[in-house]
Length: 318
Image (cartoon, rainbow, N blue to C red; front, side, top):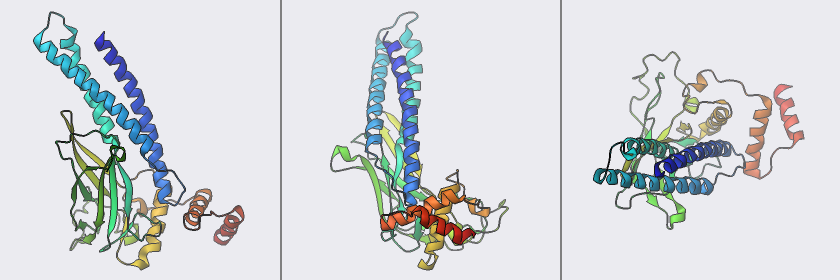
């Protein structure tokens, strides 16, 4: 009967997992729109609460299954259901926990320079920037330091002349709890700087690339966070990536780079599509008009009216 109840709880937990995945996808969409200037709510507290409560229940089930496994070693009999079913249930539970933890590691703050004028995802070499990741499942072993590491272009694309960069400041940090348990588990990388590798445009590693080199303001880069997680005997390497960003070397490239960021986030269904600008698709006017309105709203706290948008459309299309 206990095993049947555990199976039932696992089934309900898988339903909750699917719900959380939908909510997380919706949050990612809101965050992406917020990076384009949209007035979106990107707070993580509700998701953090849901992930943590589901995680607590699953880890409690894991402890129960392990206790049943120890009982089976002490007392057993022929056709004992504990012997056959406990290992299978524990494996199913570990897979569910692994899935949940992988999704619980998210980029809370996309790469941003301190004076970016509400334009994230455009970084300049030799200029400080910051990025922050958060583990939504607030459970960790206090006797085990969880180290987070930051990588840039961990899996570089095979594009001719693709620039490679080094992160000059420390690339690893211990994941820390906030001042109170409610603040969660965060790894806040601040004061990071980038430096282009020497001869990074020499074309090494570009074998098989069919396209010519991209211009600087259309070259997409990614930062990846990895985290060595350990809790209740479960050890995993968690990974999450930022949205693609542009790296420039001087302020004169800022406007063009920002236009690339907007175009990519408007139109690309694949957030790791490095060759998006090899053949960028056109943007439908209703979508472009919405994004232009967000630009004004993020700076002036007021979007463009229908009359303003009609005037812009006439200027652009005649």
